[in-house]
Length: 444
Image 1 (spheres, rainbow, N blue to C red):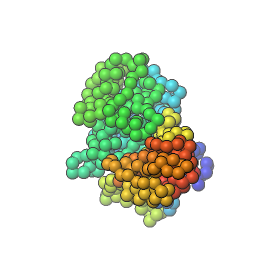
Image 2: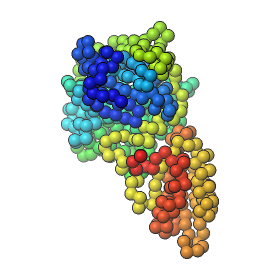
Image 3: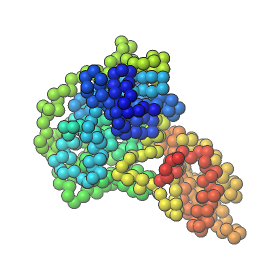
Image 4: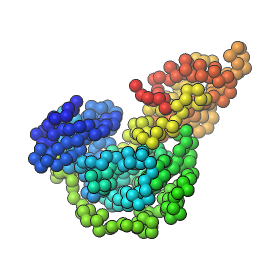
């Protein structure tokens, strides 16, 4: 546990906690030699190792080490001890852009300024073969001068991650900001996927809310796949036209960053000189001759941070981000929260075959007939016999990755009270072994 006032390897003084996630905490720090303010991201090695996120951590280090740009948070160095990995990063005093938008929509000029800086940063990352894949206001920081800084490259991919078809195949990102082709699991261009996310961010900055919203996650995905959104009446016509080209469900016809930068609305007040003044490619993290990171501390224990970065494998690295979704914007409304409703969803890190097998066991125990249909749909039925009457339950399984699924249970026939009792006392307890989390409920 890191305490305020601690000194890291006689180089950095720890200060207050700035934020935290499932596997990392970020603290304010100070370079003892220069007095420079820094942000120190502390990653628990045991936790990330247990859930298979070591490769994701390596990729984050490699991605940040490849980009030096005034609108990207800089990674100064990486340190490691037996139990922790430390990222020493640029400190952005203004905090997350999300907190500004949470207070209400931004004025057009300010929204455009942030969007210009975002596009410049993303364009530079792409030129270095780095695709962010999780662009959202929570991952955009503001420094003391009001300059936007892209952060959190934990879900990023490198150009060498592409398969022989030239596409990426790992489904990842935050649902409300993810491009339709990423959801489709047919392979996608990291450049075009990031452009879509930038369009969602622009909409949020100007509207103060998300373009694609629904009480049901799968319905929201359907809206995203169709590009089904509505601009508020205060959006200028030129913004509407630009968004229609960015939020184009077809990645082949979606506008490029070069075309965005030529757009008249985008170009208003745009200073290309100030943006390009400090974009010479330099390694911000010291690298050894073999391409591995130079770290401090116990060299044997720091192997996770020092190992040479290899192209990521298409495993369920995204599962944890999708399960937790996004903080802010009250996105809990994406899922059914009221247990009186007739449909519920849960997430599972088990293969589809295991989920189906467990559901069939439950059906047998409850004397329910199982009918299978195409597309991962099951139906549990009980005939109109006895005092409990007829009962029918639809179960649909949605694959996010081969080892991560969303399962939806919905009553299609029978008494609602009977359904709720069966769900609460019979089905939910029996599903405990395969459920990661019930949507809309806090994890314990």
